[in-house]
Each structure stands twice: as structure tokens, then as C-alpha cells.
Length: 171
Image 1 (spheres, rainbow, N blue to C red):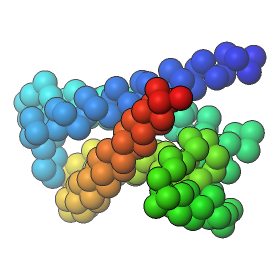
Image 2: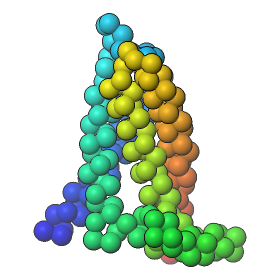
Image 3: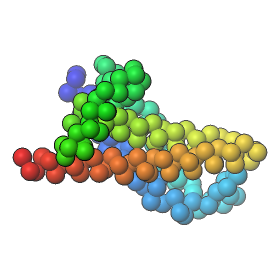
């Protein structure tokens, strides 16, 4: 059963990543401000539906990232345990690549990236839910902030993964 859950979690990560890339890459073609246009284009309509699917998959992935004590690896700040993050930051200045799943810097970065993605998905859903109201523009603003935070963290996450792959190839 544990192997099945691990395989499912790996697929969830891949699905969330693919949907995130699609949503960010196609967002320039989304035309929506306070409400859905009368005749939404493909990208506008698809963005809403793919975003909703991404929200559901991200919630499932979050569950995987927190159950059985895994939250300590991905969200070390939730328990106030930042020693691993601080040690990893010190190690970076000494030329060491932090461990991937140690409850340190890269684990915290992964957790923050997921939180930012969830924030983007939740604010996007709230924006869609409140369309046509005064609150819709506020949710849109919050959505844009969350998306920008997610993009920045996702880039850092990709750099961290690349560093681990480089370190793996060197050994």
C-alpha cells in the first residue's frame, strides 16, 4: 500500500507541475477582469477549469506532503524548527549543496512553493466565485500576488533540483 501511495504522490507532483506550467505559460491570453466575458475564449475558459483541477490536485498533494510526519520535512517552520534551514544556509556559503529531504532549506523551499501554488489556486477560485462583485477585483489582486510569489519560488525550486542533479552527476 505504501508503494502505491508513493507512486501516486510522484504522479501528483508531476501533474501539479504540468498544470502549473500550463497555467503560467498561457496566462497572457486570459482575458478576464471582474467577471468572465460573455463569450470567453479558449484560454480564458481553460484557465478557470484547469485552475480548479490544479487546486484539487494540489490539495491532494498537500495531504501527501503532511501525512505520516512528512510535514516536518516540507514545513519545518510550522514546528518552529529552523535549525536545518540555518545550517543549510551556512553550508551554502561553504560551497555545500543542502540535502533534499532533511527538513532543511530545500525541504522548506518545496513546502513554500506548494503553499504559494495553493494560495494562487485558492485566490483564483475565490476570484471566479465572486465574479461580477466588487470583491472580484480584490481577489484578482491577491491572485496576481500569489502567482508572482509562486513563480519566484518555483524558479528557486527548479534551481535546487538542478543543483541536486548536478551534485548527483558529480558523484
